[in-house]
Length: 434
Image 1 (cartoon, helix red, strand yellow):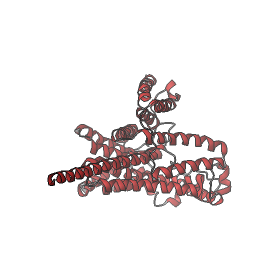
Image 2 (image 1 turned 30 degrees about the horizontal axis):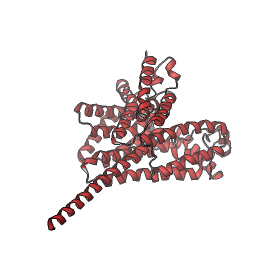
Image 3 (image 1 turned 90 degrees about the vertical axis):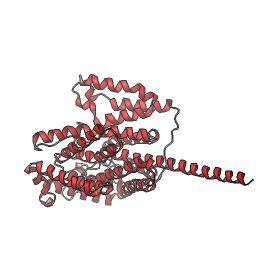
Image 4 (image 1 turned 60 degrees about the vertical axis):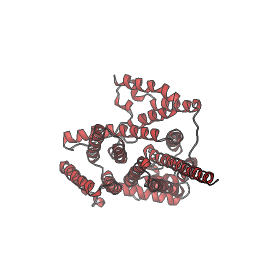
């Protein structure tokens, strides 16, 4: 039954995607983030729904008469330079076959981000994309939160099988990045039941994050909550609410959860933590040996560990977006990566500063602030997880670029209107004098 329902939904949406490419982007995002086919048990489990929806998007783009323009800004220019650089490093990759496979996956993601920049070009479409992203991850966050409450937090919460966020750590980071978007939607909607529903969703997602038992997510969540408080209004009230909720949530977690978190301070005695440190030294040594091009995609290879890792037998994946990019894309790639995210964050600051005195652009101010909170969560949590090429942060980047374009367009329209009014007023005075 699940297979049939998912198939009917996807193929029922294809005609709309062909007529309106932005609908195809929403469909593709839903399939990519929620992985609904992975919740089935029959033919739909491995069916290429994402490829079909992507094909519909590109056909729709060819048929659409809408203007198709790639927004050029410092962010998108550096982003395209970074994407191009991953193509260069793939040519010099140390593990060619694996690198090409990962490069193909990365290029599919980046191509759909490019399409997002082209077609999700107004306020309504941006908010629609946010609803899809929030709904896709909140499904697992709410389900995980209910599971946590039902089991007393004794078991870990996992993500959809076969996805970027299948692991408990990865799902927790994704939820941390999505929760600020849930807060934006709560500020945006007027229906009181929707507001309450989003609040309940945030509470349950918080429990799901805690029940991931992820130390990196715990640190990222703490920083994200602090930054969210700083960006919000009514700091005293929200601060008290956050402290009370956090106290209740922590009191709910079992003793083994606290034992897990305590290893943050004594990481030298934890085998998993030291394995990550070993992988980070591996990345550093590899980059020093190949500073320009690094090792290419999938450079975290067991055989290469014997050449570059301090403890060759202790093989681990990157467990850090920064060391992942350093090892695979070299110092050039890491520099582009850091510049890209710095410019992305500054784009949010520009939006906030330019919209402070414009009530009609409050949505843009709120969204920019929440996207910055999401980026901070990714920057901190990503220090402990290898999700450098995960599509969600690039969607956040794309949304900030698109929101800035909307703000620039609205401010320019206001400026032109004010100028025209001034000119008309001047002409009227001149006629009166005549």
